[in-house]
Image (cartoon, rainbow, N blue to C red; front, side, top):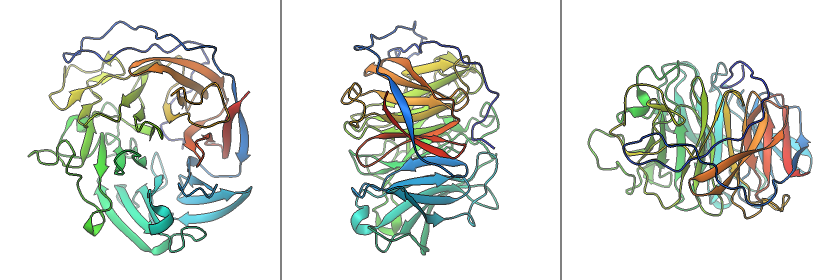
Length: 394
């Protein structure tokens, strides 16, 4: 089953309106389009690999090897290099592959070339709990992970099979590992998990995986010493953060958060922020009130910088700020690329800070499940149908 699947919607061309963050009392602002700098670049996709089963992610090891790694929801990781593909890791015996469950994320340690640490995020067989684990690759340059080195670092129970999130990545600014977990599933967050400080559901976590024992709490986490709050929490109020990333140049955080019934959103956090953002689910869906919960008391209320409604798609797929060289019009411009599972559209968020405008760049016709980067900062698109393509200039 497709992750985050909903009924397909018609292709209707529209711009996504973007707004400045509102005042703390959260009156909904009037949408205001930011100017698009210069002509909109033309892009296309060039297929680079195929034959995968339910792929959900493509990433790199940060070791300048030129390899990319494709993650399958069914539990396998393949490495692709010089048009050759080989099995890198298989955790299918540890996971449940159903609904929106499976192998959901991998991240290579910033010092992977020396320590060989690979981190994985999956839903555990038996109870469907979200698990963060570490593997060691004895020979990082040419070897594969040693299955006997698997160490479970953190577990969060899941009440339903959907909205697991599961993306993991290291910040290029502080070096900590971030892990995004969905609100626990069902619909409408029935237990209000995303606004509950006592569990990890509906949160972005920040973890020190260099600590003794394999995991620790960064002392600068906003709730590291606050009674009644899980100290791992970096941000609140996420529904199903499906694909998110750090800008490799600035360290800014970009999150694609899947909506409930009507709106999809992109959330943004500058690298200079000290954590504690509340992205407001389930009080808000996008820029629009969802329940009568008003302004949450937790964290700093933070509305999205981009939203689109369901005439444009049904399930956002977060991407990357383009920092490659294949598309000169985007290089250095700080444009965040993102897409939609159902419509296959790809947009770029143009502008600066919270003043963004979403511009459709391509209608791909694919069931997009993820974007990815290689060592050089080039961006890839993952199609649930089994292919991986590179984004290039048309």
